[in-house]
Length: 169
Image (cartoon, rainbow, N blue to C red):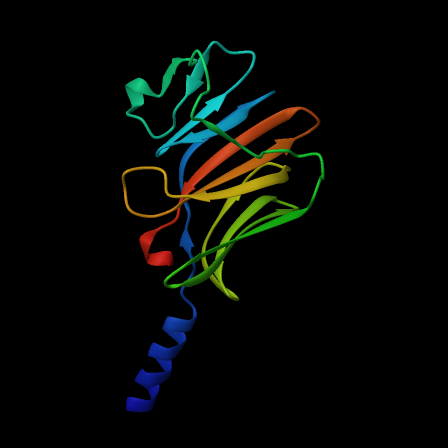
């Protein structure tokens, strides 16, 4: 009886699925630029008069574009390479992690791994090309955010922002 219980417990722990990456926000537009400054993230579209701040309270997420971008750093979101997979490494005191965006038949797969162990994942259900991944700690809540830049078709760009669950690192 003890042997059977041990086998069941062992199989249960090995078969647990990875945590889902929690989607915070997604924005899709023809042209988008991504900026970061002092714990803030701003998304701009040249064709719009407003800026989008995904980490502000809901009522304040859309605001007029700033008059200047002093102090803001533009993050790379170039998609000219047309890669099927992008990997970005992140290291802290607990180890080295990999954020991966991989194009698949059913969409764009986003993975958060430590070495070969899958810790968290999510799927963008678009036949999109991964452009860039940025790993940041932007909001006031503990934990990292993954910002995935992608392109759909020839001119439609998107940013999907995920929270990495604290239990996934």
